[in-house]
Image (cartoon, rainbow, N blue to C red; front, side):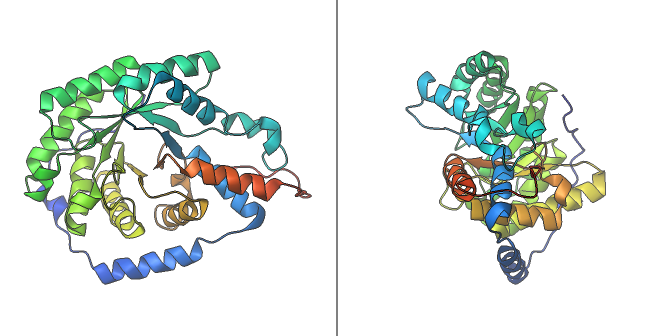
Length: 319
């Protein structure tokens, strides 16, 4: 498994000034361009499905509902249902980008996917999700436990108090330890919890610190904060990704999580990524949605768009 490397901490990379007016103007422009309809909406909906981390993070999660989640992730539609709009050779690729569960439920998901013979990655939230208010040793042990149970992706939460008090080097050191705990066995996705960082400048700095520490993805939110994934925040994180790539050559993925519930909202995010990072970023290795309810709207849009509709131009490749 190819994972990102750790770079030395460099405080010069944290220097930034962000114009809120510019953010709002660009965000409005992006939102106005992210509107599609008809078969194009169906194709974008299927694309969003393949980029979704189907998630359950409830206190009453059991093996039974994790199994239901995995079945839905692996087989979101009957294969024959998509034959009119998807190239037949791509049908087996129509599944979610991953399933995301608590570490204690990873083994349940692993058993289910083995029985289904489905190649869907398992992601686990770790390091004291959602607050991160645990000792570092405990958080690292949780990463190890999740990987040993079968997780290939670890979604960690950063220690927000370090960001809020400007202890960037200490935050960097902690994330480096988490990167080392993942090793080359799991990708590291770092949750910034943007709704609790206080400013857009802190969002940029936290993004940069996590990338210096070897993050494979930076992720907006746990989904538990009062403010989660928004287009302005996504734009700031994209600026950080672009700056980091220019200065180091390392490519980092983006994961908006929390608040993306409809296909229209997902298309707006995909438009943002396409127009800033480029179309090649719209693949599971570089872009994900963290969502529990998005698949419901994807299913509704696809079924409505295909019911009684003839595709005369032949199958459309779902990217």
